[in-house]
Image 1 (cartoon, rainbow, N blue to C red):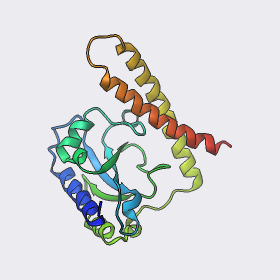
Image 2: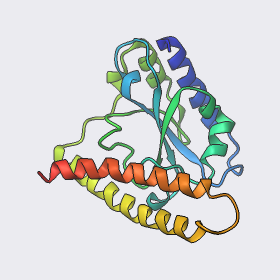
Image 3: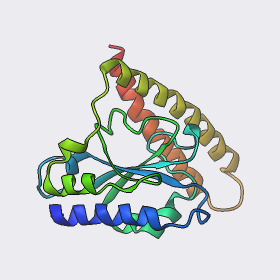
Image 4: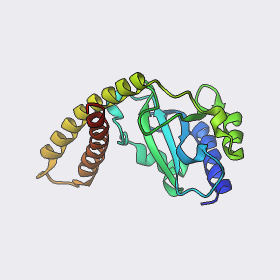
Length: 197
């Protein structure tokens, strides 16, 4: 996708974040961050990587999972119909980690759309609005914290799937949740394993 199209989609999503009624969803998105290729120099990109920070507690938003109601939120904002790769996060922990490197805040419930960030991204000067890189120690601690959350979530998702495995009704929501949780856990396991070598 062309750079201008990607930045247009990002600006549209930032506007939509501020337009949604507060009581319409089980949770609220309180911040929208962009990371990845869109913070680099202008070129064609495959996907727009964003982090959506919710008002949910950390244990309800483990790495690479979607909170209950995320699909509805994504449909309401057209996130699901555009080339976004969204990572859901909790307001109770840093947005950054080993994959979300030096993100830039483009919208918050407190301050609205950050025109400065959107202009910088559009101009290819996203470096100017990115957060500072964490220290190696801070990053290691962050990954360990996420790993613990992910392991607890994996145990819950596995038990939930096991409890519903032979019950009537659709199993897909539970198997999808288990798949997402497992994917996040394995991603973190690889990073934790490397740091212990």
